[in-house]
Structures are given as structure tokens and as C-alpha cells.
Image 1: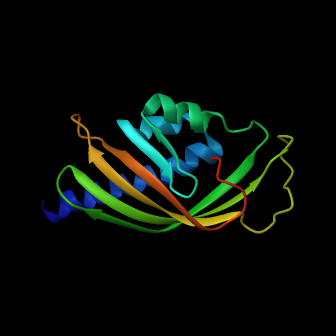
Image 2: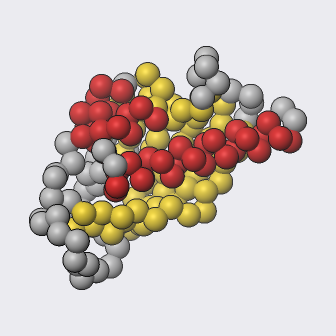
Length: 149
């Protein structure tokens, strides 16, 4: 790959990482399934949860409670392009969340983050040239409740 192709691949993967949390916090959570390959997976090794395929991912992420208010901060995104069609990344996240939000627009009191961890991702380029998540593994060294995205 030439340097420009590598840079474009890195940026496309970074964009997926950010789009993922944006959809969870501000969009339709079940739509994150579209960011994965058809056989893509999300896993949390601590409790053995693993969801494979877009239908399973849509159902899992779409089950988010309607009264949940959350914001995730992503940082330290490091994408490594392995080939013209594959890449990996590690990115840190911090999650602020409350359940029972009434949907109002008034600010709510903030507390400390409930989760601080990182994702390990693999990416594949599809036949049409789009980069997609092939797998995402959540690591949660600092956390409260079991993650339910």
C-alpha cells in the first residue's frame, strides 16, 4: 500500500470506531450492526458473552433500555493496517450513563464514569471497498455494572 492508501484505510477504521459510539449514544443503537461484516462479532470475555452476525448484534444492541442516557468518550485510537483489506485497532473508552432518564432536555447531575476500558478491533474491507468491523472485543479493567451497550 502506498502512504495515501494506508492513511485512508486508517481514517476509515477510526471513523467506524467513532460511528459505533455515536450510534449507541445519539442514534439508533441496533444500527451498529450495519458497521460489522455479515459474520462480525462483539465479545466480552469476562462473562463469556459473544454475539455473532448482524441479526444477533442488532438484537443485542437494540435491546438497550429506552430510558438510558449515555455518553462514551473514545481516545487513544491506534489503527494498524496489516494489508489492503485488513486492519486492527485498539481504542480506549470511558462511559457515563444513567438509567431512568425521563427524556427531558435539562442537564442531569453527572457522576463518575461507570466504565473505563478498551476495545480490540479487527477490520475487513468488503467487496465494495467499505471498511467494516469483523470483530470487537471489550476489555473492562475499571467498571461497574456488566456492560449492556
